[in-house]
Length: 304
Image 1 (cartoon, rainbow, N blue to C red):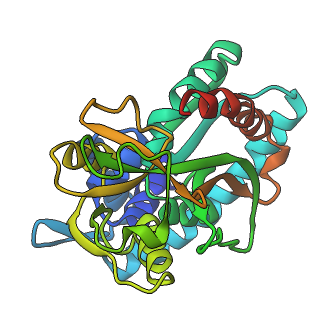
Image 2: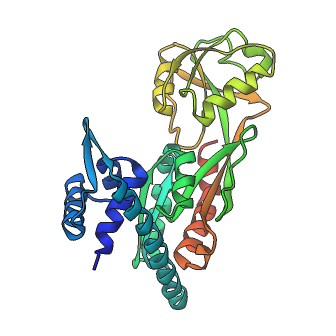
Image 3: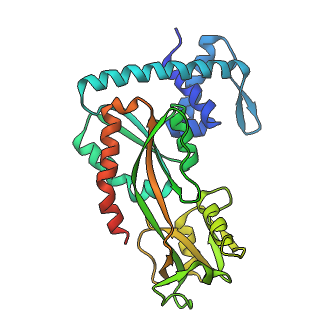
């Protein structure tokens, strides 16, 4: 009989593309994942992973087995949901995928609250980009995704997912202290035509918002630096290398070299929780979503 834990390891490698990424998602070491798959190869007498450069690729047989594993894991999840639903208390493992600034600014207090009130619940966090977390939730790799969207890029609604709004996160223009705009209470988008911008790399929601919104005012944004982490963008602004549009959530205290200026109208991104249809019957899901919504007002007020 095939071991479900080993099938879960193979499925994770199939979804995440590498042993290391699968290990991070499962909360194991890469060595442990490799050992699980090696045992599965011996059980099935089939080669499942092949070396490709520094990484690995799944064989055709592995892809078939991973697809079967996904179906089995879905059946197991349904059984777990029914049991937890009957008990009526949040319990078991709950995997959460969350984007970086919410993982830093929101999730610590939410996870601590859940752990204190529901010791039988094993909530585990993985930091992951919003578009990836939504896909992972839809595929059943994680139980709950915390993601965000902007006005120009609404949240996609893949079939099989439900969602709830957590709250709205305003953004500010950050400028170096001593910049001509630093003393302003607010600034309009049309006034930023000649600025040097620091932003996230192309492909990110924040980058696309900046480019599309400022282009709509009639000029091409002059991007001089790109950095994925908001803290890196703040450091570049502090060094006088440009200005940046940064959400308040997870931003932390600004250094004295940086001044926030309100952009009029205020750009806002909306946070959502997403889970598979039907999983809301599981108390762990409903309680975690409720806790996210409950903590948001306090988190939002602390960032103003």
